[in-house]
Length: 228
Ligand code: 1GP
Image 1 (cartoon, rainbow, N blue to C red):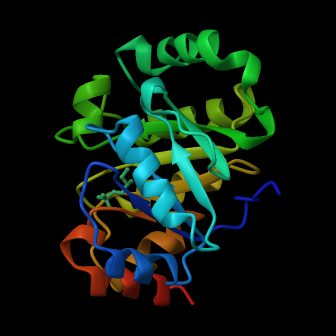
Image 2: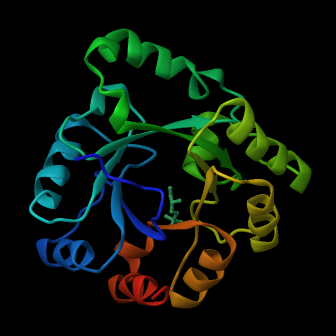
């Protein structure tokens, strides 16, 4: 069955490179979140991805692999999200790695399970910004232009504003959402509890909660309840 991500309001992002106990994982998977994304900016390997997938697969929650390294592509997820970092200065993160991965695996890929996310990374100090050499000093018009590119030039299903590690500018998120019609706006970064979850959910279509799972599980679980 192909999972439909177009109605998701809340997702948790689990990092295969970080430890999580069975009990915590159980609570995350049964929290009522719309989906779990498995992904991280560094230290993601085939082995730690398989390990996490096999632990999540015991639950009904949809599970997505966000691919950042072609060595760590593990079959068996419901969907595969492929980040295309639109504001990367290292072109490898726009299409280079994608080309390499498709050269290797293109013939066996099920394209119905693959969604491309047009990313704009805005937190200069984040690992993702450093790895991709993201041009983070963008104006509102710059970000809106990337959003329009994602929707109208590239026909991407998802436009993802990434502030990983810090809470972003909600005015910017709101004004970007206004220029999108069909492409879904994902927001991730610095959601540290129910209040920020609510603020972000009012501005974006889908919110992503990552680090908080590892920092304060109770508050992470409250971000799901906050949107009900
Ligand atoms: C990271 O957007 C996600 O890719 C979530 O960010 O870890 O800051 O919650 P945080």
